[in-house]
Amino acid sequence: MSTKLEGKVAFITGASRGIGAAVARALSGEGVKLGLASRSGADLGLPESLGLVCDVRDRGQVEKAVAATALRFGCLDICIANAGVGSYHPLAEAPPEHIEEMIDVNLKGTIYTYRAAIPHLIASGAGDLVTIASEAGRRGLPGEAVYCASKFGQVGLTRALDHELREKNVRCTNVCPGGVATDFALAEGHGRTPDALPGMMSAEDVAEVVLFVLTRPRNQRILETAFRPMKESSWG
Ligand code: NJP
Image 1 (tube, helix red, strand yellow):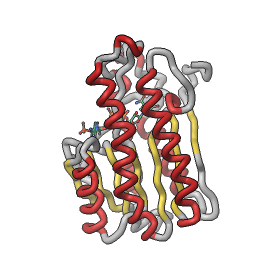
Image 2 (tube, helix red, strand yellow):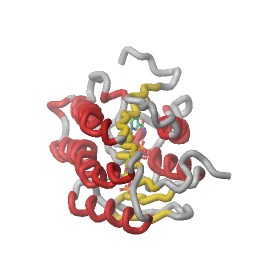
Image 3 (cartoon, helix red, strand yellow):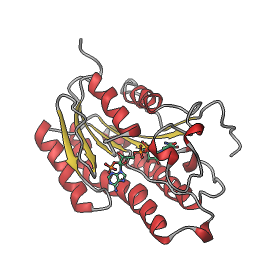
Image 4 (cartoon, protein in one colour):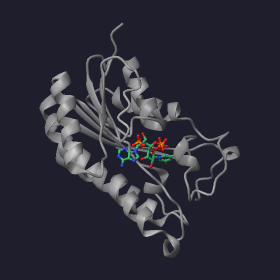
């Protein structure tokens, strides 16, 4: 059965697990061919997929991974900047190496990814660029200053790119979830234990939103989606 996305080619960063892997599986189910980038380079065993060892902090590695995807599948229609890390501390107590990693992976990694992908997305004639940002990219959250800065940066980048790319038929979307039950949610510095996971959203919930965004008719685009688990208030 052919789907709206059948035959399209997507590049996803941070695809080895969590949200990136769920998005990869969802797109694969729709017949999308995949370049799957992460430091481990896992291809998830999906058909028509290429596992790519790529640390998004390294611009050269990102450029090679994007080029390898376009070369293998002949084009690139969709780019999803998902790779991300988070460590929550009051700013004065934040370890400098955590600060650098969050800015380098979340913000600079996204910039490098889109810089490499945009010429291909324009050439596709109907491109999509989707940033897995966060609620932390829409509001300041206590104890998350650097993470928020990196996510606000991603959101600003994507909004600016919408102006650059709309007339070239490339749609630019920020996907901004609240808490999602992945390894990330239990990362060092988040101050959570596994009993916090039930009630959070699943990586598959986020993948469904990404699919919704990508399957809108081409005469419209979704600029931003914000969604949170019922147990999270919308104050913080
Ligand atoms: O995280 P996790 P999520 N270069 O830890 C990869 C945002 N978000 O799926 O390199 C390349 O399960 C890593 O692969 P590997 C969040 O900010 C989350 O929850 O092999 N890849 C893995 O595939 C992030 O932007 C929540 O270790 C790198 C992936 O990234 C996105 O969602 C809430 C890398 C991380 O998988 C995905 O997070 C929210 C690097 N340098 C936003 N470093 C939430 N979970 O609650 C890591 O609002 N990766």
